[in-house]
Length: 392
Image (tube, rainbow, N blue to C red; front, side, top):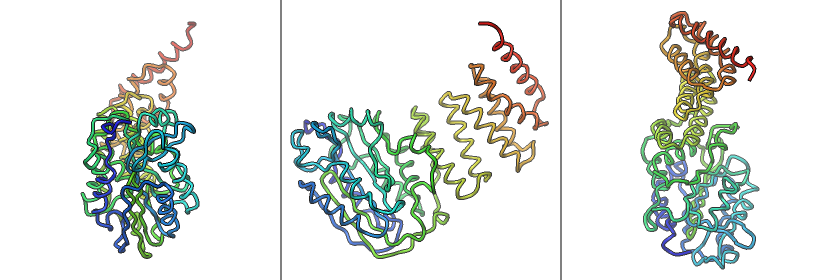
């Protein structure tokens, strides 16, 4: 691969991450030892350092930055080290599976992997085939993999790492890693086609706890950062982590909205759903915050043109609000209006009929609405039933 095609500078990224206060990087005030391994050429040396860090009983953060390549014979992903060439991948690069192997034995919920990588032309088709990066089930993985030959700088701190650091330093509180990731992705102006990890599909999967969180009673933190060339390690004594409910979190809605405006609807929807799950778990299913995120998801679906989903979400939000608010509350009426608008945009009779029953039931429970809305909706349902019963 030609040198000019390498667009991530691991040393610059690691240096920038190395000056972040430990309290922000680790969400803890405990003092830590720091070890840097820059320009490593031996994958066995790198994995030895990783194994040492993985043996730490407390939380662990692994940071990788550099070039993602592939062993052409075995078609296995590797992180290139200093001196790795296309013909020497098997001997001079770090196999991706080694990372998972070393982390596999750690207790779930204690390990976070942060990635800022660029794939070369050999690795990119394999990533497209996978749809994501192979991951260790014991680790939470956040990051980006940029496509080959994107228009970026190979000497400066890359966009994702820079925005991750900026989000950590932007406010008085330290958000959870998933929230920092969402904010960084929204602000980084990533190259088209960038692989974001976790993917929107993975983000939408049911969460067992707060996204990106560390339990309040977990023992001392440690971070081991493994770069395409450099490695940085921090280890500290036992310390109590702040409880999740005690952490102020900055507003991610502008970044999510920016993703939607950029046409990255799946990512915007995935991040919004992750936030809804977090708020619901912390404050309750019918809490104002959870309902607000449900309505944000509804509007994102509208922006994408997914009017069936938008209708269902707006209807659900209106029904939940009606359980604790009066039928003439502005928020209830706005949810009903949103549902009705999206329902009128549905062109498929089956989808319109499937969503009509709950929508009309909601409209009937709001006497302050214009009664013509219910009548017109019922007339449309009658028409759709008639249309579906006519012979083709």
